[in-house]
Amino acid sequence: MIRLPLLLACGGSFLAFLDVTITNLAVPALAVDFGGVDLTSLSWVVTLYTIIFAALLAPAGRLADVLGRRRLFAVGVAVFTVASLLAALAPTFGLLLVARGAQAVGAAALMPASLAFVLADTPVARRASAIGLWSAAASVAAALGPALGGVLVDAFGWRSLFFVNVPAGVGLWVLALRMPAGVTTRKRLPDVIGTMLLTCGVALLVLGIAQGWTHGWTPACLLGATTAVVVSLVRSSRHAEPAVQITLWRVRAYAGANIVSVLFGVALYASLLLGVLFLTEVWHYSELQAGLAMTPGAIASAVVGLIVGRVARRPSPRTLTVIGALALAATSGALALWLPATPNFLGVWLPAGLIAGAGMGAVSVGVSSAAALSVPPASFAAGTGLNIAARQVGGALGVAVLVAMFAGHTPAGGVSDFARVYLVCAVAGLAAAVVGTRLTLATTSG
Image 1 (cartoon, rainbow, N blue to C red):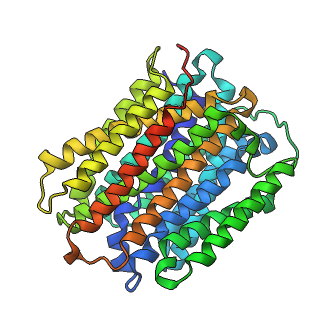
Image 2: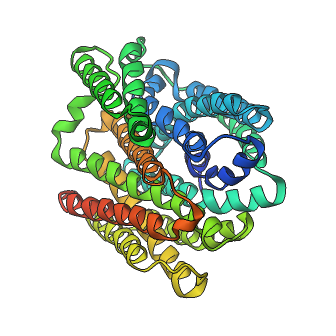
């Protein structure tokens, strides 16, 4: 039986990551409701959440020490829930983006607090397995998002994607109030200026890749992104409460885990968004059909993640990461080389979804375990939060690359643009597998 702390942790992780991808299938419906908004602008419904979520995860890991894990979780889930309701009711596209940004703030707050529940209330011998389940919940949510989104959009419209968060958020908030308050070990907040610089840097990087090519902004955006990130890191190296705990990167296995996370994020989020665009545009699936077609991958990810997270003696993080990344790379490579323009669910999409989904579940558990187990116990929360942030940065870059490569795309272009993006996903997955061979940690039986 799952105890309340682990239930809250997995529930918070699931809810935060579900909203990373659940809006993928809302893009066509949003284009209809907000006429005149192009694909590049619509992609910010996905990307804005990812950017803010990623940038705030690293410093938010230490907020639990300032506010207490129960209070931070309750505040985070409350902000997320209210923002979800505002997004569901948004009358204009601009207000929808504001609500998505507020959602990301809430998600960034509840994620490290949920991890704190795992670390503080799980026996040491079972901590690796608990982290695995927590990570698996996030992976399953990301994979399930497009499937659930397709069903909801088809049945109730795009606003239901945000309404569905409200009862779940209220339930988690009520459960959080049953947890003990915990103790606070820090008095000072993480560096606010460094956090803002990091957020601006990631946003400018994504903006330069996604939209800069068509407007001539790319050089200025990349220069601004580099400057902002460098200044943020320099401040972090000198600040008593840094925005990013960069000293953790001195551990080779941890640095490798973060590089893998960036590459995995590129392949994961680009392929998930690309899949729903391909199914609806080329195979002319409805949102419901596309959502159901994405379901096998989500199920495979869930099965692998949950099984690996609960077995007593599981493969090492290196084995999980390398095999999972190779599965994702092989699937994307095969689709890049042979992507039929006519529907072939059983012969192409089903096996590809099952293999890729299993790979996603394996990489997610493997790299999260490697990140957590390669840092001192006192740095578990900061280390895992920074690792998740790296994945989200990669995801934002992956979506930006997709948008940039689809600039000027028309339905008449067929499958060629889709094949090129799948090739990018394959390269990112292969690179993740290569770096993953450096994750030499082994798990203990628990």
